[in-house]
Length: 499
Image (cartoon, rainbow, N blue to C red; front, side, top):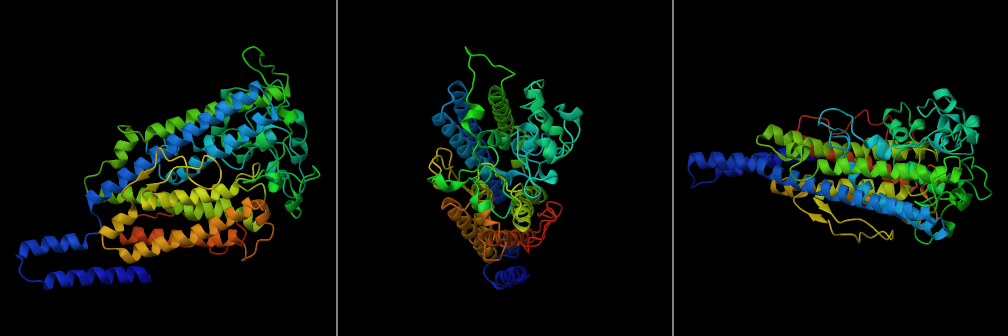
């Protein structure tokens, strides 16, 4: 409220100073007044939109390329299933997440990830990155009454043919014959994985990044091979032997020790073969889905043309609202609420976004970085070596961002508030990342959900950041809610409150 009052006062003062100036004709003074007080400049909004589209094209292009590199690594592992190739496949998965995470700010706005026609919510996001995963529907799991109970890994219904398409409890999920890998009568195909698109519950999701993650890492269990009960998770198989990133689960190589190739054909009765086949199908679907989204942002594509073509102030406001909705809803509802607070407040490993690989610290960093990318009109590239530095910079973008727009509109105080909020968020997510790299992954960080945890600070910072994003929308006289109130049931003003 203080910022908007100051903004209104600044605009009023500017008008008065201009009106009191001498030496100009009446008509030119009116024109100058209009220019000085207008918060919507169509030409400058066009520059924001073009930069926003350029960043989307660059990040999705990097996401496609790294997914193809993951496919190559999986093929090499499949044809020669050694420990070295196993590690290389895991590393390729982690690298593939680096550009993709920065694309998530393009969600919640009917862009190609969430919509195929700029109006329907029928995009492929669910097939790409739906979470939690239906791991118990894919392969064997261990369960208990806390972290991996029926409410978390139980199957509610499925289209794979398991249990006649019906539900499975956690106890039933432990039976290898009750999953796709173990039930050798099920054909592992592109059609099977496409069922994710119609899943009614996340327990039935079987496609996307996290399906591959589960088959590479398996569950993140305790050192003794037993499931954690939520209080002893710090003893779980995790980062202790990793040099620069968390290790997560510890699926044995024996699970994947038998591959196939053109000369050594696929055996649908061999469980190791079936795991490789599942990943082969999943990564091809991932590439296909990402390619569709990327192509929507290409020069001349119908979506990009519709997004960047404006001629009136109302159209300019609509497009700015779309960008700000992605930034605001990702910040508050999706990242702070669904991806952090649910796991933080309930100490739920299953609700940790990348629980198999213990890569959640990067999910948080990259989602938040995507928001700042949109604000600053910058994309630095992605981290191809997993050391925390963006070194793959071939598609880096440096353009006209919302920060430039606010400066040119004279909204410097608001810009300062936004940049301070982004910096506070950055401090918090860097602290999470630093702890994880030192051997305390996100699932261990949330065992004690107190106000001294960096995750607490990050949730609070994202909540505050979203409020400033709403202030930006209001200052630009955008008549739209840029934070979807239905995106989460969490009260992110209080990170310890259960959702």
